[in-house]
Image (cartoon, rainbow, N blue to C red):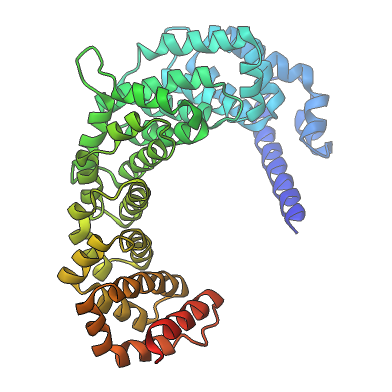
Length: 428
């Protein structure tokens, strides 16, 4: 079935390209031959490109040697309609020389580069050839000093395309990362979403370079400003864009996940970071889940900071959405293993009652299983403390009734955990 869908999609794309080409060629840019009629006789785009190879190449050459904004728009249309081999053809004929003309609209130039490099074969071709790689690097260096606010969106879209490509080598991506760090310091609202999306992608793509990432983020620029501090400041602001905050939290997640040295880990995971995570628990559902997952990973290593956010976790456990509740329950599984954390949660919040109340609501299988795991840890802790042994005995009937509803649950894990709890704590 999937093969049929893919084939139909390709047929549809080919047909659209043919229709677009028909419109373009009807303007008689080429020699006086009836291209419309010939196009209709073609079975597919490949046949058309073979038949009109010379005319297509002549038209491209004509545009390259007569650069103006109108011709650049025509070239973009051709790139969008023709196959990737003509994008490679344009690159090989030194498109950068054409784009360096001062009177060209830089946004059109960037739009053309985006359309050329969206094809993986083009990016592979550029970076597999030293000359082409140098030409691209020189062009980017040239335009980076001439960017105005209206150009930055397309510039970062182009950077994102290159960053996402599997054919872009890491040395080039390191330079992109450094530019991203500088943009963090500048914090331009018009491009924040674009460049922030690149950060987590690169950190995940090359985790072995984690030391480089952290040193780039924590190094001060000529004005003694550090990208990392700017990143945290952005996450602290109540009006910061939700998508940007989510992506920055994801970047921090990968940084912490791939920390190869305790020294770097301790520099990243600080009370300031915990404050940032705490505030983002309340920003939005996305940032709440992202922050909780990051806190979970931090607590797996060291739960020292639990006391600072325990109030927030319990508050959100009562009021947040289902996915958020599940993430908090997973986090509680870690902290309930330690007696001092259990005592805090029991003394201040009556955590056992809360957990059984959540289970009684039977919200979802995933939540039921996460809740049962927390109940199991809590009941174990209660058996070690006299006053809570008596507490469980006082509520034995209520807790047992709730558990018995899940003895025949369709989910095997829920069923087995329930049976274990009944057998271990409520059967005399």
